[in-house]
Length: 269
Image 1 (cartoon, rainbow, N blue to C red):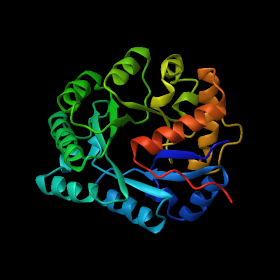
Image 2 (cartoon, one colour):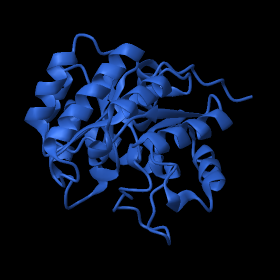
Image 3 (tube, helix red, strand yellow):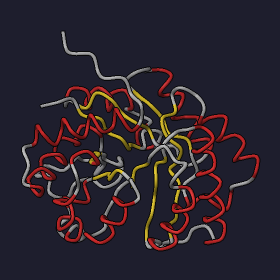
Image 4 (cartoon, helix red, strand yellow):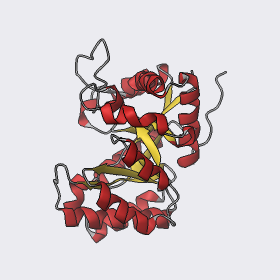
């Protein structure tokens, strides 16, 4: 099977503090040899960059402020993110977007932080790592204003159905698929949609430590997701798409290399 890239893993999460190196090693043993670590606020982005600097070419980072933290967004935060986004280890701006499901930050703060980070992505010429939950219309309205200037983006942890998928594809977005597709309770709409994802727009991610695939037969004791489980998501996705897993794996890796401007992996000796 082709080497995989987990394009969204929260490796700075404190649940990984005791065994982060082992998590990275298990991922590599499972064929997941490159990881993109998500930045959800300034401090988390700095931590993600530090991890990337320790393992250049293997770990990369995003720099951004999640909509949950939008009320903390200031002009100083924006300036800091712009500086961080220009670092070589940073391959995307975000996680940024809108979340009206929980609304941990007021909607107006979320919209302002989202627009600021899209401005940063344009200035830095980096793609955007996007979050949207229960805010589809507003999310699209904001993105439309920046669409012609952005260098690309991914709808991270896409969970929607065919109509939402089609709109994102029209916007030129890549689609990030997580273990949500393995959820027999919540994944029905997603499973109906994935067959329509073009092979050149497909990306794979775990969103670890969240979204442990529910259909794994032997659950980890900690009930914690990790990048080593990405091949499990791949197999379920390939089955739902009616595609060969090796083809899906190769496409997702090539797409990640192209979108995030990653060098191709060296062949095994």
